[in-house]
Amino acid sequence: MYFLSQQSYANSIIQQSNLLKCNPVANPSNTKQPSDISINPNLADPSLYMKLTGALQYLTITRPDITYAVNNLSQHMHDPQPNHLLMLKRLIRYIKGTTHFGMPITKSDLCLRTYSDPDWASDPVTLKSTSEYCTFLGNTLISWAIKKKTTVSRSSTESKYKALAAATVDTIWLKRLLTDFQIPHTQPIDLYCDNTSAIALANNPVFHARTKHIEIDHRFLRENITNNHIWLLPIKTVDQIADLLTKPLSTTRFKLLRGKLTISPDPFICGGLSEHKSIQPV
Image (cartoon, rainbow, N blue to C red; front, side):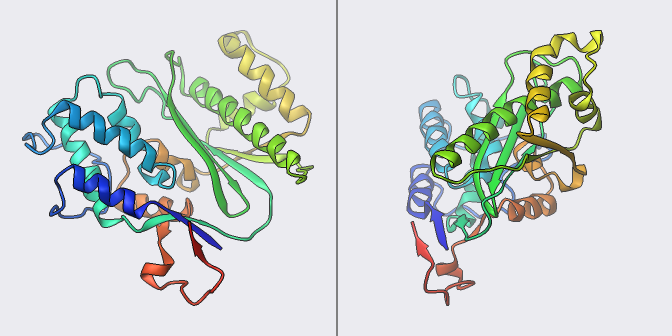
């Protein structure tokens, strides 16, 4: 087993923010913004906001649990407001308490599975949706993404469907990459979605006029389902792992999904797995 972490880099971000003495928090995002927001003098400089946000993007390489918060901050680098400074401070406080967290790479089967979960009209200003997906190779998380759509989706089904198409593209690429490494993936790849309308549309060979605006994505998904490249499966919203990449969550649910994403403390520091001599930090 290997463990990927960036503890020293995380500590350097905290030092740059001048928040070495801040109190840690258990959740990187607020589900509700406070009504009274005071600007933190340590983060008031817009150039520092940009510098820290850029640094945090690099930290997401081994910390997908902060991906949503960093993506949110990145959308306001041109003009950060007091609430964005508050969000940045909270994220750094979360990192302060989890600098030793990272991603384990464990020995398991080499079967791919992907979870897709967009957040329809999540932007209160533009009403554009945000799509997210994550892919596991066995028990190891190997790919994840969060991206705001360039156009407005007219329904939650359309939003889900576009996210499924994006997840399929990444999943098929990973399948071909494994083939290059002499690891063929002959079975259809499980792709989990919590929207029954999108699944029904994907499996229906009859295309309806009311969904013509997503015809390309429909044909693309249908082709990959027909060719047994992917297998679209329903999943309960409560079990949707990609939900952590979608929106702010309660601390209880955030910790639950963080564990399912395999983000955990460094076993060398916490002693949880230190007895295994094969574990190597990276």
